[in-house]
Length: 98
Image (cartoon, rainbow, N blue to C red; front, side, top):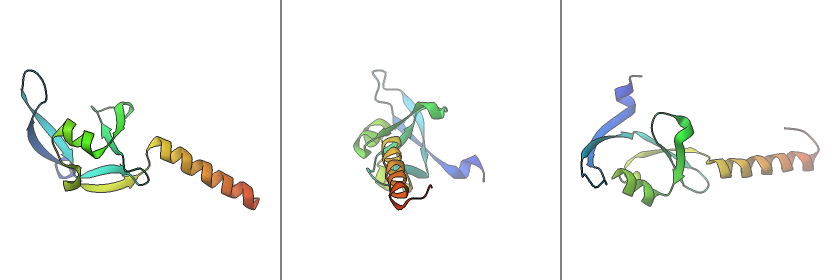
């Protein structure tokens, strides 16, 4: 799949003092936590620079309404840890290991 088919390119006004126009690449699939509904906002090209934000923060930061982008469900780090704890506890209770 070509990179161009994965991302849609839009132009927005940057919320900076210089009011420069910049290009924002909006993903076609927006990663949303299936438990708390926070959105993974990947800043830059490094996965270590991701953060989890509300839809309001995403809309303000990027000038794009998250409800207009298709969602893919995932877990934020906090919800993933909680889910792992529940699964581990379940398997302890029934006496087997996961």
